[in-house]
Image (cartoon, rainbow over all chains, first blue to last red; front, side, top):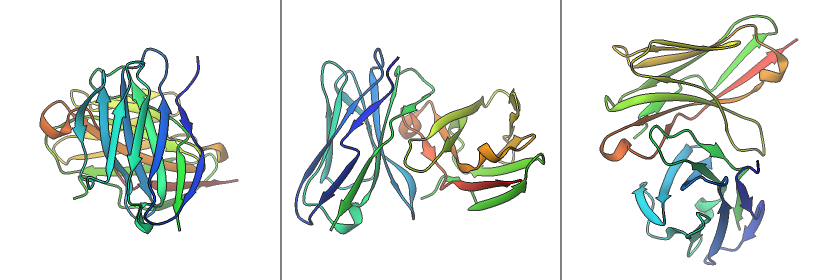
Length: 113
Length: 115
């Protein structure tokens, strides 16, 4: 059974650019969540999608957005990148039931220079 | 606003001894708690969980204790092994309002088990 796949694994971008990260969940999982991990803040919740609908959103500026496709794959986009956006971005999938038992991907390491 | 707190950024334990990792929370709506283990360059891996209707859950060498009145949980690893060296994250979720459909994480504790 394939795990959660995130692409790309590593990314370097320049301030002001935009970036799109991709996440393919475990087959059959309908919920995809995104988290940002930084050394100072730990894992911070970005948003959660279930059946193409955003069900919950964390406390991040509007530059951070996401979407989910009909096959449950998800993308997140960050526009007008800032140095502080450098982080490990983790995607997690679950069946979408409560409570949330996630399976995480290995993450995308984004570096903004 | 850190609703889940792990106050010890690091813990060092000798192989074979007990490791105790602690976690505190502030939100009374949390009713499900999890521990994740994370190695560098990998995503967190689920370790063990506990529902608020229980005060203890065991899985092999891992036991999680929940003290709801103190809003405190702990993870015990007995006996500790060098392969347990990793960052451990405590997380919580609820079934109402903003706690639904997401996990709140602590900042993690780096466990080092030395031979």
